[in-house]
Image 1 (cartoon, rainbow, N blue to C red):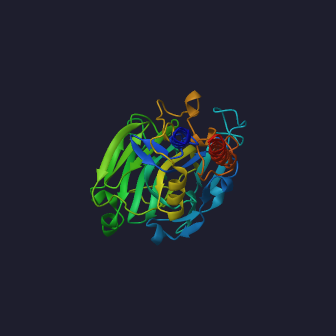
Image 2 (image 1 turned 120 degrees about the vertical axis):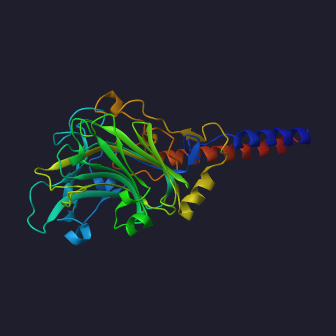
Amino acid sequence: MPLFSRAVFLASALLVGSTAWADCECGYTVNGTLYTDLIESDFLHIKNINESGWIAQTYTSDPKMARGTFGKDANPKQIVMNPLKSRYDWAGGGIKGGDAGAQVIVKGGDPGKGGLIPMGEMNTNRTDMLYGSFRAGMKLTGTPGTCGAFFWYRNDTQEIDMEFLSQQFNMTAHPVNLVLQSQASVAAGYNADKTDAFQVHQLPFDPSGGFHEYRFDWFKDRVDFYADGVLLKTMTGMGVPSDPGHMALSQWSNGDPKWSAGPPAEDAIMTVNYVKGYFNSSETQRQNDWKHRCKDINAPKATCEVPEITEPPNNNASAKTFFFSQQHNMTVNQTIPSGNPNNAQSGAWSMRASMQGLSTSLFLFSLVLFVDWWS
């Protein structure tokens, strides 16, 4: 009887140990690569940037620093949250009119000789992103004279850019500039097109005509660039970053005729309906958190595959893309901002996982008492 009892206990413990207490507790996979952390921003429903995990930037650059005819004036007024009217909607205009989402604005008009052009930039408050898959649903401006950008940034020598020059858009050309800013580009006068980490790629659609998903996957040895799930370009070499940084969105103008041109004649609006990042953290605490919550990486549902889009997120049914943070029990121990009303309550679901663990422990303890009594 004692031998049988111990066998029952051991079998029960192994059974419980092989089950994930929460979905995705070991992370999220993209094309077979596992990432431990996520950030998901559903700007179709976020009203306050301060509760979104993003920070509107404030700084000024004179013309010399901005390397243009004009300087830059980044200020929070040029970032406007314009969510849909209802949390249950996924299409339609924003509460302030126009396209719904986070609006990143360059103010139109001539600021005068040597003046500063008001612009918008927003960065994630997390700066520990070390390798990952990053994507944004965006609609670029059709107003000539700006540079719109979705990028990852560490410093001027470690930067991954997808940049759109609105002066380049016309009936036959719709380019995106794919860039790895590196020590080589800085040595070339901050001119990446003089390095091997720069390419102008023509898109099969007008970036200012609707929303599309732009994405880059960053590995130790390469960066893969995508548009609407289609691979555009793979870049390798010394320009691939190797240190942690943050995601950013910006739209600016400095009057440089060879790049942004401008300033725009009228306000130029770049609208973002979502940003998603699946990445590994460089912070020791987050790494320890992962080790604590990931009980068995091979357990069912311990890892979750990131769904790929099948059509552009262009203000219709396809705009309802998948968010792990809006599902129950899929973001335990993740840093989920409170600003999106559709987010599942991460704290509550973390508690649920803890209760599951407590229940399991109580079950095993009760089983031990029963076995001892029966023996």
